[in-house]
Image (cartoon, rainbow, N blue to C red; front, top):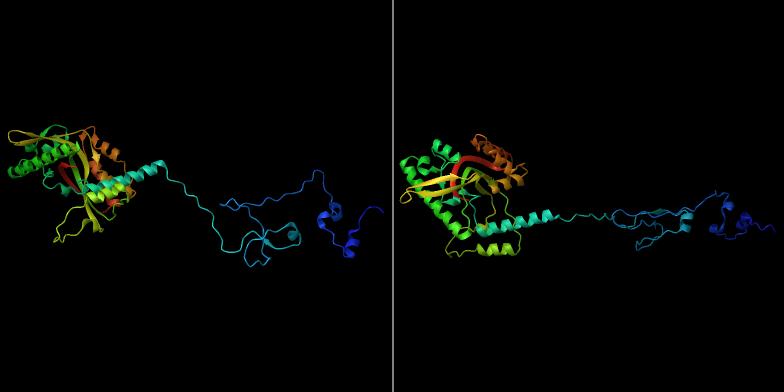
Length: 336
């Protein structure tokens, strides 16, 4: 008659009373002012963006599919877990796309390798490819070399003063001039330089040429007809180590014929210097800290041109990172 329900009496009679329908005072709990029901927000699985749904591991579902756990099951004290049955999955690993600088560097490396394949051997890699078109000044007279390094025009006869050696030097200078003229007519440039120092080392890596249209063109242009009876090995099949004989420093030089019948030649160095890019790439690709422009600038001192510090710097780096590195103090004029 009072309108109040005795929970104990209902439970004793076997009546089913929904717990959700009971107010807070039936449980002996008094709600404070400003009470708000707490809402549980499912956490998200790292890397997937999907919420972690509680899974009932006691359902016994043979398919292994996760079952959502309701409020009634949690009230009954069922065991829940946030892991699904089956093998654990790893999060998605995001890889940043290459930057524009990296894309350009990769394309340049591919084009360079393809052009090297098309052009064949380079004198920047092997000075022996110069053949007869190489004027060796390694044994030149010191006073003549001092005059040449001072930036003054120097006669070949002042550099090589012994009769037989001078005759050979004239023949080599004539071959250098002829090749330089041919390059100028064919390519529009005449890259004649004085190579200061020659470095030798063993190269085991093979140039990575991408299989694109440029590489295909390079492979086609390198094909040469070979006699059927020839037993020479195919250069393309050679993948073993190779010996590099590269110039160290390159200083452009002008070579002019003088006198009747090209009896003498005149050499003049230009006021620029460059570290061989082949050597620079080999050093830097193996972790050497090298600034080629700074090394080249260091050869021009207030007292004049002196390449010894630059040669010593490059030799120390080569000894540290290049296999079988061996520098030689040679001076060779040729087309590089």
